[in-house]
Length: 365
Image 1 (cartoon, rainbow, N blue to C red):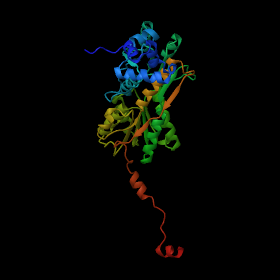
Image 2: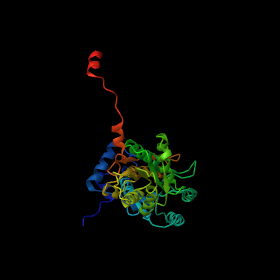
Image 3: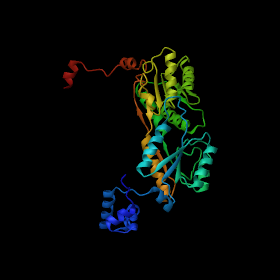
Image 4: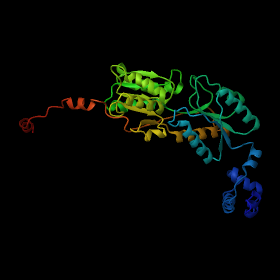
């Protein structure tokens, strides 16, 4: 096997010291431009790659980020956290870092893992996920002096002391209401999570604001349940059984939306034609359902890039105050949301402006 190039081999070939090669890789500003060009050319020529193990010993940096792996609770639709983890690994790798994942069922057990990893010096920092009201993890990490960034807002905390990146759920559900209202729907129900869930309350707020702005709240209905296809089906069934049922649903997740579609089919309705449904997350199943599901897509790749960007600023000490990044999602319209029943007939029944007779047009000219 060909011997792996070492820093000594690069130094000998370039005619410089070992320290100069190290500076070219880690502190290029310390070298003269012509020296830097020569060393970097030799590095490329030999295919030299610095030893991460040696660097960790020297700088006490592992180039590893810890992140808890959460089980998906999206009832078979595929969760956004699955996509986030892949995007996070890609974003970290592009910066020379790796992601160490671990699986524990509770926040207390996650803190125990934090403590173990920090004690062993196994990671440089953490990405928190699944933030919620009463979350004890951020304060524990702050007290330990650990570097981290959260995916999700610190719900219920007015002035947080840590950085976070999140998706504007309210913007997504506002877009959903505007889309349905533009199709002629005036009875738009919201299928949400129990009150007190930060993500669910945020998405409810966008629906409520958009419905209020359109003057549609008087005809609106809201139903809440734990996330899942079965629960979405049950609460949608209750609303469709009412004497004056909704013609459209804005759902807090794609799982709830899939449940609403099943409830409509149970009643002999055709989803998309008789009742429109909009989900949230644009999970993989959204584009393969029949009808294909209109859904709000989260900018997962951009979130991952921001999380890594902010965390590296925290690790380098360049960030002087907490970062707050709120990214906007967008609506992906598909066949599950169509013109409201009767809306086309109503628009055709409204008389347009009277056209002048030929004689009047001639006189006017």
